[in-house]
Image (cartoon, rainbow, N blue to C red; front, top):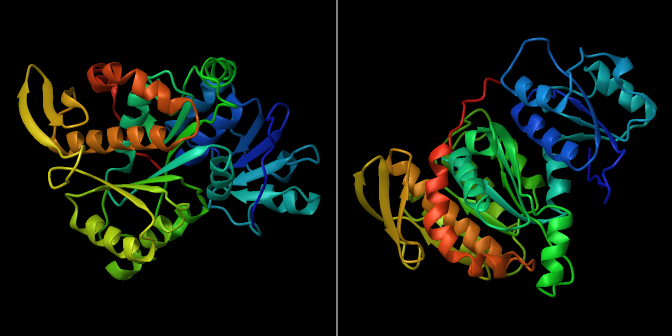
Length: 358
């Protein structure tokens, strides 16, 4: 539908979500609702795990109907599962001249309002995003994280919003003599049908690249080209954090780097060079111990080397993002490095994700 603009102040801004029970949609509902928007939505009657999220917000999904959309609605956000010329809510919105935006477009517009980081890759997106949020929850930063599933450490929600959002961020900015706080926004971004191209990243984390979604990407070269194009959306001097242990990711980064030599590359993993080279240690007392130069000795209370790898990537993303941001986050991150090193991964013991049912 084209580029949309979101208001600076969401209070009394009315948004109707078509397909509100979708994982990404419910997460965006959380964000808009917490910002003060008035939310309505429609979907099928079948109950999904996202109904628990909507129930907690006091939002009931309505049956699809043209009567759901009235002239006082400011924006309709819809899932790609529904068509503008077939869904009754969307047909009504067009008749009334109410702007309509795909979920990916609305998320992209929101990402422009912050210092945003996109987590992408064929595997590991949700785990890495959830771990990034768990880390950021231990720091006094103005941060928000959107994951593609329910995360236990987010309070069994899809979104983590720091207490520093809003007035506390203003106070932090004043104490650090900053002009204004800038939120660090981390979101899981999806490669399917190039949905992530609507996102506006300042930092990207790439977990893996391999052949997938053959209905849209018939060959590996096709899906790889999509990731290269997404990486090239980074601004001049933007940061790309990537897994050096994934051959597809490494090859994709090499192609992107030839097109954009200005991009700062931050590898992580056992094959990485630099502060995020990973060494697996022992597993003792339900602790998955590991080491990186930046973190020193650290541990994760989640089994599996792949989760340690995701944690390493999440930590590199948080460090790179807050360092690059013009917000007070970078100073707070440096000042609280000890808390980050020793407590963030312990807090990850509550991390977990559910497989989306739709």
